[in-house]
Amino acid sequence: MTADPQRQPRPQPSQASPSRRGATAFAALHRAGEPLLLPNAWDHASARALAGQGFRAIGTTSLGVAAAAGLPDGAAATREETLRLAVTLGSGPFLLSVDAEGGFSDDPGEVAEFARELYAAGAVGINLEDGPGPAARHAAKIAAVKQAAPGLFVNARTDTHWLGDGDGTLARLDAYQQAGADGVFVPGLTDPRGIETLVRHLEVPLNVLYAPGGPTLARLADAGVRRVSLGSLLYRRALGAALEAVADIRADLPPKGATPSYGDVAGLASPTDAPGRGGQQVAGHSGGSGGRCRGRSAQS
Image (cartoon, rainbow, N blue to C red; front, side, top):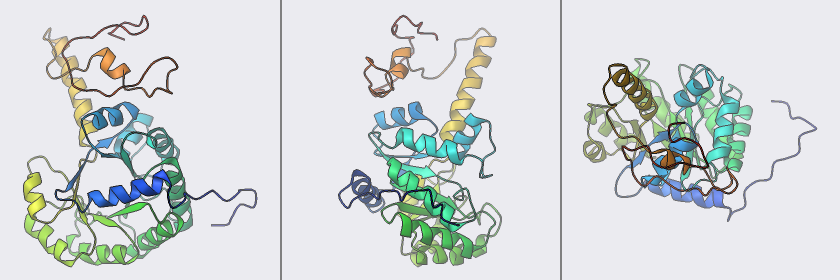
């Protein structure tokens, strides 16, 4: 990538910056007693609500970000939307890891620049996927990111199991950890024995995707998994709940499931988001509609 002579060098976080301290804390969560359970948010409200449930670290879901913007997932179409969400969430009361697809470019330099912007926004982790591309290209992206933002936790994802090439998994993961990845991610891998085999050959923490009906969190921990991501599951469940609710209402039935009140959701706003309106975290859910907020209906 040719440097832009008009672009000034971006300031780098200092050794004692919040981003660097947060990145250290995030890395430590991968080596604590239990695996890191990482829920994935798609906007400010979902992230704040999850933080209110006690999650110290929260990821983003590329599917949720893309679908909310009416754009395709996994097509390098949501660079700006992803960065905008990172800026929104980067100062939140949680450690933020961003799903950046493949880095929104095949150019390692451009991927590194994007990672540097995420780190400056307050993100402490980035998820980079390889897709069907060559392992060498993905390794070059990882190395470039680690050079540009050394404190950023790089979770290198391989899609071998989703693409039907499970036999190539170990070789790819080895290339990625040698390139500097802080962790590796193998979505689609659910067999505990296969997980144990990978863990024995890895020098970095292994991340898997939670699979409803698959191994329990306890079984994954026993197999050596250090991070369990929920991916787009929560976003898809939220859409499913909305469709179930409207179907119940259409059938003249009361909607089932927990419903946060208007006040609960309004309280998720940061104090700086709405002058004069304090922010708070959702402590729980209620079936009622809650009170009114500055004259707006609780049904709005």
